[in-house]
Image (cartoon, rainbow, N blue to C red; front, side, top):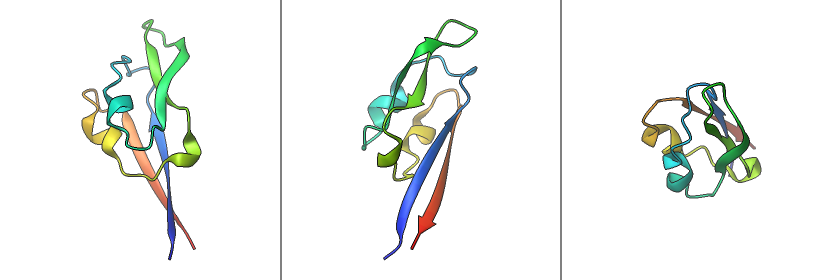
Amino acid sequence: MAKIKGTVVIDTERCKGCEVCVASCPCSVLGLAGEVNSKGYHFATMVNPDDCTGCASCAIICPDTCITVYRQKFD
């Protein structure tokens, strides 16, 4: 059976750090970064990248559409 691995790409300049994506992630992959963007917001980032399954819950729920999810299949 093939394993699916996901990667989340976040537009850090558009992210306002609302944490909705963090709460919606079933695998606890996302969290807020310690640094801030040019607007002064702590932005979302992958804190546990190896746990991402590519479910895209974060991208669907993001109110600012600043998340893109990529999936890759491994045999």
